[in-house]
Amino acid sequence: MPVDFDRIIDRTNTNAVAADGFRDHLLDDPELELPCADADAVAMWVADMAFATAPVVLEAMRRRLDHPIFGYTVSLDREFETAFQSWCRRRYDWVPDLEHHLPAPGIVPALYDLVDLVLEPGDGVVVHTPAYEPFESAVTNGGGELVTSPLVRRPDGTVAADLDHLAATVADAGVRMFILCHPHNPTGHAWSEDELRAMAEMCFANDVLIVSDEIHCDLLRTGRRHTPLAKLFPESDRIVTCMSSSKTFNLAGLGLANVVIPDDGLRARWEDRHFPVVNPVSAAAATAAFAEGDEWLGELRTYLDANFALVEAMLADRLPAAVFRIPDATYLAWIDLDAYVPTGLNLTTAIAERSGVLVEGGEKFVADGGDCIRLNLACPRSQVEEALDRIIEVALALSAGLG
Image (cartoon, rainbow, N blue to C red; front, side, top):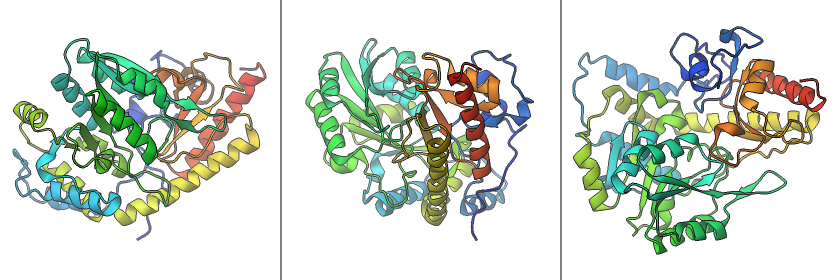
């Protein structure tokens, strides 16, 4: 059956961070007055979807719920792992070794653990900027030092790695790890094979471990295909790959991710720390997603493509000096409003208090966020249109000095 991505699903009073947690987790001032009731704010910030998950996933969860015992569960039959391996073979032509696969309660928790397992106090970890804020938290909470390598931003909104800057950065004797966001969040850039090879080889030359966060890997524009970094270097044990069904199938609340660690010593240290228990309902959901979710994902990608096209058209018509390019990947629009807003304005606050739309401004990201906003387009098209209409009105008012 066709999936109704236009369906509006009320998330209020479900403890959803996007709908119920924005005062605690988004706004700098939790008492900020909005021009609407909190329940009527338009949530476009957290990178989860406003869509129901795939029917095959829901059915698998229901089947597991029919068995009334939810005790300690380990993937003894390896069904979860083999479904993930089969998904990787079909979609990326990459076959991760099942013996290297480890379950984790999420990719961010996995980053915290990897930092703690690999780094000594003061060791450096490199990230591209602008960067997802939990990367910094994972590094600094583990006693490491965050080292940034800014992306090159072109006038048309595209980005690229500054390979010369990155090479100099990873050559620093104190750098031990490179966290690669692949595809990149928030810009949506999908790294080319040339970029991937160049970045990896400079890390190998300096004995820098690469942690490749590939959580957005399935959310490319229709017709594009993801290349796992580890696929390009099948003999290397210096790449840790982190993937999950959570972003692709809107399952983040179930807390399950896939971590592939080919280095025997690092994997042993991970296993010493973690008993491999998994949530039985989460495992059923992820297994079904990997085994049967292809058709639903194809429909999702088509819908997201149209949402991006809508944003492109609305900006071109009403905010033509905004810098925006439909990204290669993710469901996140990265829009540069520099031509319309005062430099350094807290855009998260400004847009929320003037329009009731909840977005993340550039100030929410680690360095180099500029006067950009990140807009989550994984929601019904009517919501995208309404939110962007309000944001455009705010930008025009600020540009005219009326804000």
